[in-house]
Amino acid sequence: MLPNLSVISIGGQSSPSPKRVCYATPMRTRQSSALFALLSTAFLGLACGTDAVGVEACRKIEDARCTRFHGCALVADLAACQRFYRDQCLGGVPGKVTPNASQVNSCVAAINADASCGVAKAPEQAKACAFLVPVPSAGSAGAGGAK
View 1 (tube, rainbow, N blue to C red):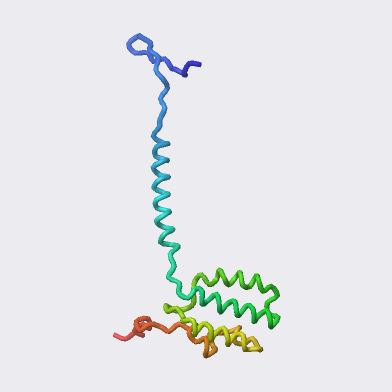
View 2 (cartoon, rainbow, N blue to C red):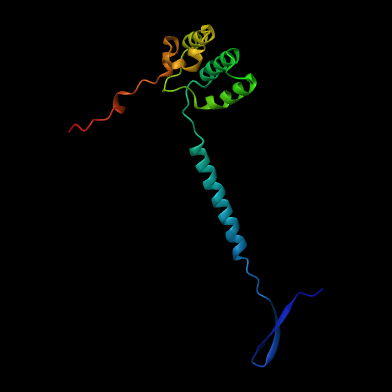
C-alpha cells in the first residue's frame, strides 16, 4: 500500500509530498513525563520521611493496652485492635527521645496490673508511663508578649 500523498503545485508543476506529521507533542509528552516522575520522586522522598522515635516501644504499650481492653470487655476484637495500633505507632511515641526498655517494661507492667483498666485508658497519667507526656523544649515556650 502506498503512503497517503498530497499533490503540491509549484510553478505549474505537480510534485507529490508526504503529509506533514508533527512529532513535537509526543517528544514533549515524554519530557514532561520524565520531569513529572523526577519531581514526584523528590516530593515523595521529602513527604514520606519520618523522624518518629520509639515505634517499637509504642507498639509494645499499645499491644498491652489492647490486651487489657479485651480483658475489660472494652474491645471485642483483640486482633483488630492490635493491627490498628501497629500501624498507628508508625508515628512513634510523643517527644523526641526513645524510651528505654526498662521504662517500656514498667509501663506495660502497670497497664497489665490495673484491673480497673484506668491505666490502659490513660497511660500517660500513670507514674510508670510518665515518659509518654512530652517535655517541652526550652525554646518552645514563646515569649508571652515580652519585649
